[in-house]
Structures are given as structure tokens and as C-alpha cells.
Image 1 (cartoon, helix red, strand yellow):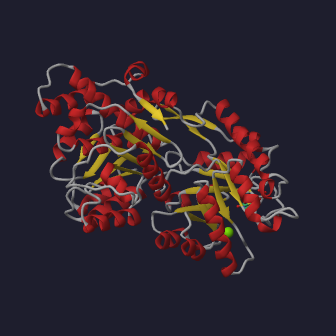
Image 2 (tube, rainbow, N blue to C red; image 1 turned 135 degrees about the vertical axis):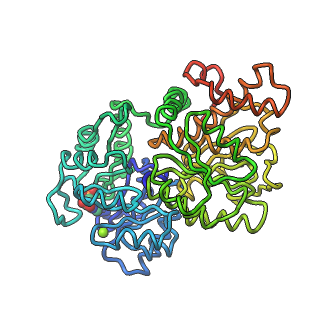
Image 3 (tube, rainbow, N blue to C red; image 1 turned 135 degrees about the horizontal axis):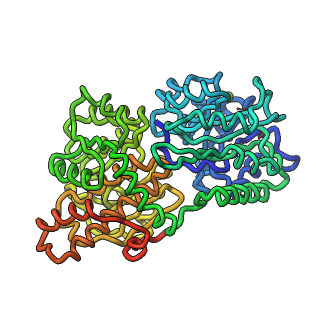
Length: 514
Ligand code: 3NM
Ligand code: MG
């Protein structure tokens, strides 16, 4: 459910072909807007025939793909399916959310328009990926059925989403003059479980101010500057940097230790004990149940789920468990163990991708390259050494964009991407490859971090991988490790001990933003 997809909603363009200035085209205007930094596009055509709509949508898809930006179709699920768009946006009078989800599956984005707290609750509970909150102000782009919300109404809706928050954009009458006031005015800071929680709009959805602009590129540059300036004023990192990660890893670890999230594993028989011990060592609570009867109850507990396909005993139960966790807002981490090794495993990966709400995919080089159709061999379940950086980056970015989740590829260098930003981690002792299941252990730790750090799954994943890798270096540096057996114990010790303060990290972390 909430927040499992990783999408940048900050500058959300909604199209309207009736508003383009004389002498310009919709595609031309959208391309300029993409050059100016639009992060997501919704094709909204209220009057167009289906054939024309599909033709236009296909052209737009070619364009948005060039800019690595998702394309959402307004209302028309048939058109979204026809062109394999990234998702749909539905209004309160359109197809019901549950029906749309059944048709589109979990791999697609579904946004819902809301105007009050009841609609908001229904959309969040129903598994929407994001909200369009509106209308903020009067607009000549659309005939409004209800009074505009104003900044105060938007704030009320944001505040109503307590701990179950999903990304939200505001829409209706937004322009360069009022954007900053809306972003700043709707920001809320309060305390949930001892941590400051910041609730704010994740983006601005704009029609006429961009589409009717004489130069959408300049207009979007200006919106982007406003978004950056408000982020700065609110002390929110604009584009996560290496420093941002290093400053936040310690609190990310502390959150696990404070919250003790439950991490439900359906993992393989080889690593089950080590995964449980590693989970405990970082401060989370492991449960290794494979029984279908209790999966719904387990999913209702705050935590995360590991879906490790090393031993595929009961795939249906794995899918059901992932769906139950998704419904309850828990992140789901897929480890596609041996994913490229056999035809059967390739099919199972495809099934998980379409039926399970995945938050993070964490595999080794062979598995991730194979999923991205960039070669990649799996020999049994072990990894096959180094992958060149260009290929690795391309694979994690493509998969993250395609499946709208975080993708991590582990190996001598680890790569983590949300599709737009990719980190490389050069840490990790070579001894890690001499114990079985060290990759599966990373997946467990990723799930622990994701469970306790839901507002930033990219940061959670990078933090987790840094932690295991640095713990492996510290373990080897102790001097009492004589081989894989003692290393295995030392690694679990160091996961338990390691405190990743910014100072320690600055000393040890070898993290690069590619
Ligand atoms: N939906 P402009 S308001 C498409 O309230 C749309 O749900 C709204 O256009 C809602 O940015 C709107 O030109 C139009 O004001 C917004
Ligand atoms: Mg509609």
C-alpha cells in the first residue's frame, strides 16, 4: 500500500491540449516542460476519441521515457493498459479504486483525487499510491463541483493522514505567485513516537500555468527553484547527496533500535538462522513463518517483509503475504535469489513483479542483470563477481524506473537506485563471499531499515548496505577472525555493536553518488 513506490512527485504536470498557445503543440509544450524539470506527467484529455487518445499517449510516452519521467493517464484505464503507461489518475466519479487496482495490479501507480478527509481515508485505506488534493483555488481549467480548499483545507487533509501517510500533490489554480505560500503554509511538524514527523506536500500539480505558458521550460525552471527554496527553508534535502546520507544513517539505525519493527521473512532454508540473528542484532524482531493461516495477522504488525526466493516452497503463500503486508503499509523487499538461473525462476520473478507490491528489490549482479535483460548469469545462487559500473548503473536505474521501486545490486561494489539517483558503495570485506547467505543477510538488514525509515526508502537501503559492509570490515579488523566460520560470528557481533555515527561514517564510508 502506501509509499511502496518511489516516485518524484515534486513538479507534476497535468496536460490539457485545449490550453496550448497558438503556434505550439501539446507535445512541444510538454517537451519544454520536461527540459525545465517536470518530474511526472499526467495526460488528461476529456474530449478525445479513443484512437486519437492512444496515438497521443504513445507519442507522449516516447517523450517521457527519454526524460525518465513516469506517465500517468487520467481516468482511462483502457488507454493506460493499451500503451503500458506507468499508472492512472482517478477522480471520485471515475472507476472505483479497488477495481482499478484489480485491473492494473501492483506494478502500476494509481492516484486518486480527494477533496476532504473522508475521501482521503478511503483512498489511503484502499491502497492509492498518491493523492491529488484539490482544488486549492478557483481555476478556469476545470469546472469545480465543490468549494476550493485553500491552504488551510489542504493542511487539514495532510494532517488527517496520521501514521499512514501517502505522497500527496495539490492541484487547482497553482501558479508561480502562490506556490511558495502553499508549500510553506501547508507544512506541519509534529511528534510521532518521539520523532519529529514532517508532513508536507510532495508536489505541485499544475495545468494552465505550465501548459499555457509562452515558455514552459522557463516556467518549470522557476517552479523548480521555488520547490528547492522551500525545501531549503524547511531543512529538507533537495537531491540527496553523500553528505545527506552520512548525516542520516545514525538516526536510521537508532530508529530500528527504538521501534523494534517486526520483519517477517519467507526466506530460504539455508539462511534462515543467520537472517534471524542478523535481524535481531540490528534491533529488529524476526519472524520466519511460512504458514498461510497467520500471515494476515503478522502483516498487521508494524514492520516489513522479506520475500526471498531461494527456496520456493509455496509461491502462493509468498504472494499472499506480500499483498497482506502491502495492504497494511509495510514495505516488501524481494531478494530474487537465483532469479535468472532457470526458466521457472524467471517466471516466478515475473509473478512477484506483477502480483506483489514491492518496495525494494535486492539481488546480486547476475540476478539484477538478468531481470534487466542485460545479460547476467546466475550459477546456482551465488554471485559471479564484478560487473562493470556503466552496466550496473544502467540496470538498476532501468529496473527501478520500470518497477517503481528501489533496486539494489550487491557485489564487490554495491549499487542502489531509485531510477533517478544511483549510489555506489565501495565498502565490504572480500571475506563476505566466503559465507553462504551474506547477500540474503543484506536483504534482511535492508528490510529492518525500511521498516523503521518509511519516509525515504532510498536512504534506508543505502544505510543498510553501508552498515553490513562496514560491519564486515570492522569484523575483519578485530584480528580474531581465522576464516569463514569465525567471520560469520564476528559479523553478527559487529552488526550488534556497530554504531554508525557521522564521524565513524566519514572515516569509513566509501559512498559515491553516480
Ligand atoms: N483537477 P490549473 S483542479 C485537473 O480539484 C484538475 O481535482 C482539479 O488546473 C481537482 O492548474 C484541476 O490550470 C485543474 O488551475 C487545475
Ligand atoms: Mg476524472
